[in-house]
Length: 230
Image 1 (cartoon, rainbow, N blue to C red):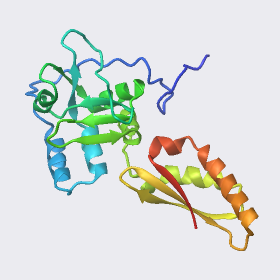
Image 2 (tube, rainbow, N blue to C red; image 1 turned 90 degrees about the vertical axis):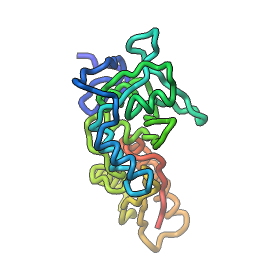
Image 3 (cartoon, rainbow, N blue to C red; image 1 turned 135 degrees about the vertical axis):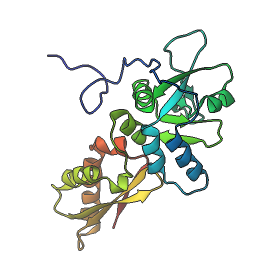
Image 4 (tube, one colour; image 1 turned 60 degrees about the horizontal axis):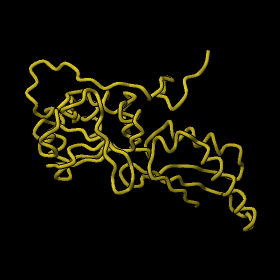
C-alpha cells in the first residue's frame, strides 16, 4: 500500500485536503464560549498562562471568516514576517470588528486548527482586532489539531525523552535538560564531560548539535529553540 504524500498527523492522516465546513451549533447566539471568555479576560490582565488559553481555545467553538461569494474557502492572511495565518474569532462581534463583510462560519477550534495546518499556516490568530489578541504559534496549533493537550516544551516529558535518546550515543554528554524560553520556546541545555581539551569539546558539541537537529519532534513542539552548553 502506498503512503499518502505530504505531512500528516500523528495517526498518519494527511493534513492536506481537509475541508472546513460549518458545524451545527444549536441555539448559537454568536457570543464567545464562556470558558474561553473568562480565560481571555484573565490573560488581558496577566493572570492567565498561555497554556490555559490554548486549553480553553482547543475546547471552544470559534468562527472563521467566510467570503460572501464563496463556500468552504479559508481566508488566509500573511503577516509582516511572511508567515501564513488563519484568523479565528471568539464571537461574531469580534469577527465583525475585523471585517464587517465577512460571513461568520462556526466550527470547533480543533477542526479550524487542522484546516490551518493543512494550508501550511504557522499561526492561528485569535481575535486579531481585539479586544484580546492572541497569536497561537505552530507547536500549539498542531497540538490543538491533533486533539493533544499542549504543554510548555520545557515541561514536555516526551520531548525530553526523545532528545536524551538522541544524544545517548555520545558518552561525553553527561546531562540534557530543558529550560523555558519564552511562552512556547525551549532551551536545550547540555552538560559536557569536564577535562576535555578545546578541540575534543568542540567535536562533542558539533556531534550533539547534529543529533539534536535530526529530532523532528523538536520544531513541532517548540519555537524558537536554543542550544546552551554548560
